[in-house]
Image (cartoon, rainbow, N blue to C red; front, side, top):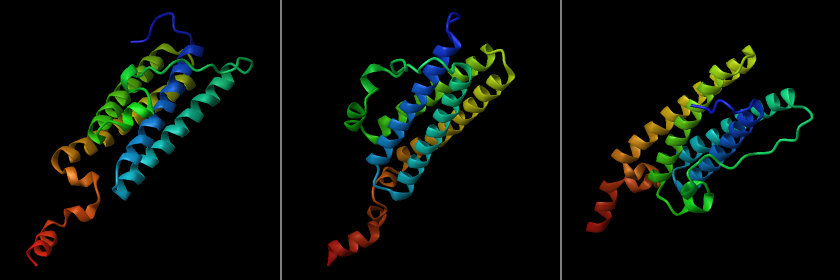
Length: 170
């Protein structure tokens, strides 16, 4: 639920900062995994979040052409809002943070869609909310995979248990 006194200027600043935070989290996830396919998936999410940031910045420039953009502090929890802190976490823990951030951001966008008066703003925030939900589902699927198949996040050759056992016998 957004504060009733939140201005459009502030809402766009929060949204832009959230997209930037998401880019950092996905880059951290890409750096944490050794699986090339998974790394590529996370890097694609970085690109999508960058597109969202650019969309929001364009809207900001349309609405406030004479006001320099001042980003607020991150809305993420303090103990996880830096890349340095996340680098010391497991990939599973960082995935959980990313899922929670996607949920929080989606809810913020849905609130903004209800709050804004102009139709293009409503459509933009609904689109972004749908995209964040899509990211949440992608991340939830990855989280489930790491729960069931931890090697998935390592090098795929580590799955070759049968051959590694044969080599140990010889």
